Length: 130
Picture 1 (cartoon, rainbow, N blue to C red):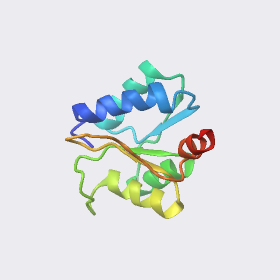
Picture 2: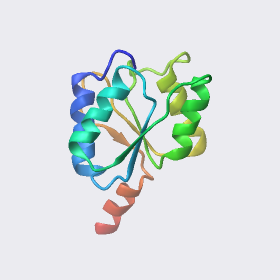
Picture 3: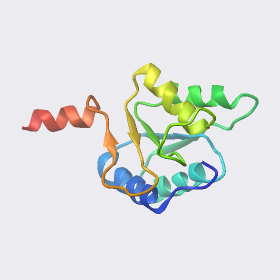
Picture 4: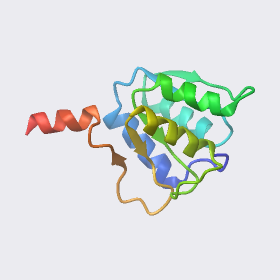
């Protein structure tokens, strides 16, 4: 989102990169002003992941599909917690859903907890430990 990350989204992304995705090898982003660039700063400060930029170019929807094709998990930080049709972030979320990519949604406001899809590898590992 051009609005940038909200304070809860910044906190959650920092926590994710220092705890859950500490071993992430790459971080793909859309190279947009706002949330994408803020996320890059958080990843640089809290991870050794290689950062891969996907600039919009001619077709931003293709860029979104390219990001989804390159990721094992999608971290989404939309500017609204309700899905919208005319939103690049939500278009990327829909593309990830269609491909069965696990999605971690970072709610914009009133955060209690981030959601991790039930079949995400970290959840499977958690169940194995029990």
